[in-house]
Length: 222
Image (cartoon, rainbow, N blue to C red; front, side, top):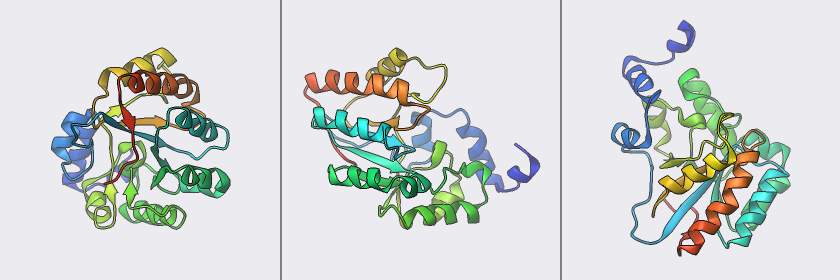
């Protein structure tokens, strides 16, 4: 990180920045208890989420797969993609799914001034009417949280499928998602071109596996 980028972080935030470079959700919950990492429940229910869309082909296919398993999900949408593909965005809502704010153009909170970051969230809010926000890359500073938690529930995750990672195979994506998911899990997939190969392989298999075990899939109601 350059000196200019580091200068956007005050001392406390920079400590969090260093810790979060290596954090898993378990540690994240300790560092940021005010964020939503999972849903406490004894029911057989999970919470699928999709980041970085909407995309006209990929999101449409996701909606078809969800319909096949009577599953609902929450889509954290990038504002500029909502502008590009408004019909796809409306299709998400018409199908009974929820949407959340994922920033207008997917800024990294660790590398963005607070002013620019918050403006970017506000710009997306003009397109995505939701009280849910997920920080792009999961990277957000303590000060940014302080500002945003006034108007948003900030949603992280308990299971990251790594569908976006170039070294992840479709089989590994599926196996990881199944291994770590449990009642109340918030699971992250991506309806993006980068993740499509892994996600579209893993998603229907994941839904079939847990549906056969009696699980349901709901939108986030927090």
